[in-house]
Amino acid sequence: MTPYPIRPFTADEFPRVGRVIAGAFLESYREEDIAVLQRTLELDRGLAAFDGDRPVATAGAHTFELTVPGTVAPAAGVTIVTVDPTYRRQGLLSALMTRQLGDLAEGGEAVAVLWASESSIYRRYGYAVASYRTMLEVDRAAAGLVADAPVDPELRLTIADPGEVTDDLAKLYDELRPQRPGFVTRDEAHWADTLNDPEHARDGALAMQALLVHGPAGDLRAYALHRISPGHDGLTSTATVRVEEIQANDAAAYAACWRFLSTVDLTAKVTSRQLPMDAPLFAMLADPRRARAIRNDALWVRLVRVGDALAQRRYAAPVDLVLDVRDERCPHNAGRWHLTGDEQTASCERTTATADLELDVRVLASAYLGESSLTAHAQAGYVTERREGALRRLGAAMSWEPRPWCPHSF
Image (cartoon, rainbow, N blue to C red; front, side, top):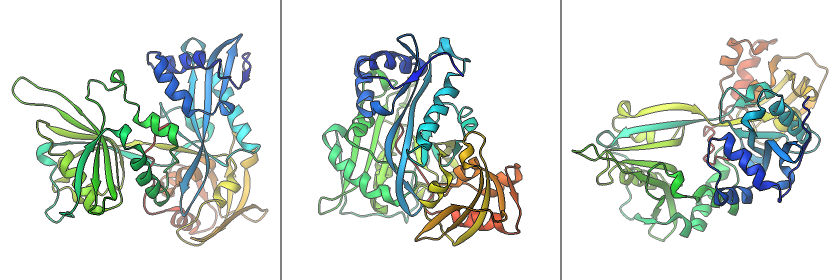
């Protein structure tokens, strides 16, 4: 419990809410940045704890369509989860998360997703890492592609101001979105936020550019949002090409993007903070050992209503199992569920039948988008197999190709 009442905040209160958000994320408060953020938020889904008329903690949710294995489904994109530094350790975060989960359970989306500013926070609320990203750094001299990487001499490459080609970028993004679990919708406001490029936020880099790869008929086949970070050690350039996002519907167009980005004159290396774990680049690099890659957590998932959540995705192999779920934070999820499904349909209903597996709700969340190996969770003590082979069957059913990836942070 907390002595500070929690309620939705209004548009008039948002400037003060924005100061809490900026302070919590160690950013300077700038009205122009807060205005961009406000356009992405749905005020009726925003919550704040108040000390008098002063907001001291916040949470919100975007209304997204999330690509899940085999289909798309509604999801709440949890965002702006903050606590004023002078009000920490008073239960405000727990109160906000409990309120938000309760609101969702009563009629909101069956699944919530978020990006975690700190990876130690959200497990206690039933979230689990459901997708990963690769953070890559490769020296220009080691960034060459294999000799038989796809080439299409009819492709045309151009550089554009991202703001001037937003519609083209959005069209390709929307074409690709249903194909990979983890993608979420990007409406006009979220595109404006993605392409928002104030000089103070560039960390010394130049303005964002869009590399466009068109086919002979003028169709956009790939784009790469990137920027160049200048540098010089007195003798040679140490400049870096920083790739913010790359999307492609064609292997040759994807390869063309990387050939260009890794050979920009007067640059020394290329980096990316946001590649899928199964990015085509890893099959194309001629010397992959010299690419420095780090796996990092990306999208976290919370199954708010287990039955609805498991029924709204599809399964790579036929599944017919009884799951005994533990969920301390959301007791309505606890108990036995009969899961059946395949690549076409799925159902998950309450049952009194004997359980095949006993497992924590976070195990199901981690595998929800098709990424996680259930064996690791079983060996860590979060899964108990009651029928031989049940773990293997559930793991095979929940896996998916391609691996999940969320290119949109929120």
